[in-house]
Image 1 (tube, rainbow, N blue to C red):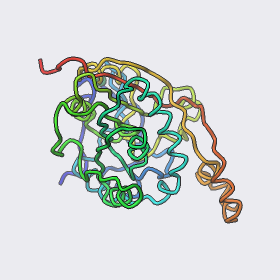
Image 2 (image 1 turned 60 degrees about the vertical axis):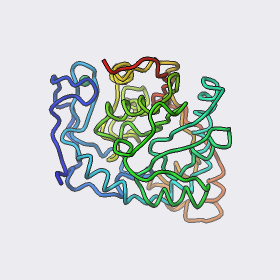
Image 3 (image 1 turned 120 degrees about the vertical axis):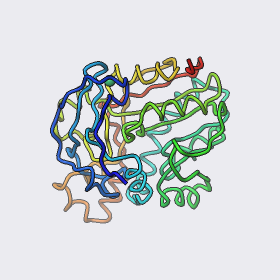
Image 4 (image 1 turned 60 degrees about the horizontal axis):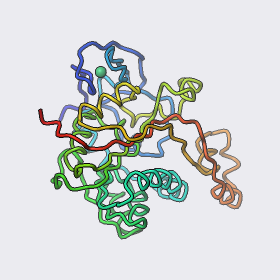
Length: 304
Ligand SMILES: [Zn+2]
């Protein structure tokens, strides 16, 4: 198995005009499963990034091969993510609120990169019939044990899935993890029923918060292989056949405990169990707006 590959074309627009943009610190062949889990805290760790001169997409080059990544994600265990389920729920509720407004009839929803099933469980409570896929065996077992949610285990691009079936496909913090975004969005198009909605949330490296944070921006991390520009994300969706329904800036909610636990300076504070549990109850909405939050509809057949 090749662990690292070089880009020959931009993974979004397939253009060949791109240049080295930033030298990174990561080595594809040395990547470990604990570096790609959701709560990894290696902020500032990046790949060598290339910039597409046509669509402004930024992408890891060289990048870990899809097979290598799948083997790593399959082994991810992330109990901290699970402990933050309440805070994560708030994030997903605001997404589902908007989805429910756009598609009030609901129907069947497919969650890609479903992790421990937090979003899936919330969607089910709202009347969606939920299906989804996740590579981590640990996460699939947690979803079953905690929510009785049966997720598929494996790779979204390889799994056998029904076509023209779902009224919604959700990709929340997913698309920046894959070296094959065109294939992922194309697959979402095919499994959606006509009129179905795709939801994408992904970091915006060109946002004000990202620029202010510079190299310490919290979305600069080993799991993120790509950073979309507004242009590259619009192009990705348009070429797959999607029409944009809603385009927003996304604000994440975290517990104060989670935020403090991200910084070593606060380690002493968190050793007090009582204080730590108090902090876990304090929710903070970080209206940084440093992610894209996009809703798009399947309208035409891209097979041309
Ligand atoms: Zn491009």
